Image (tube, rainbow, N blue to C red; front, side):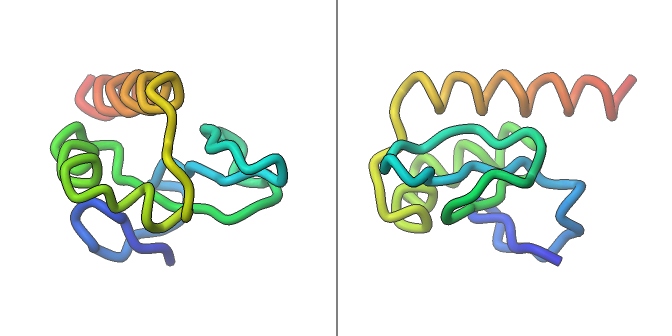
Length: 87
């Protein structure tokens, strides 16, 4: 079980999208869930991502500023998963 940084609810790891701070200090999207480094999790819900961005919860959890490119990739992945779950 992992906690979403946006809504702070506990869910199974597979249900969440992981963002990781890699050894080089950069934040990256971890689609496999196996990358080394400090991780933070977000629900595949655009509203959760908005809350996490607004409160800077991802930045705090990873202890690094998440780049705009990584945020765009994360938003795209969340939209893809939300569409798959709705369809």
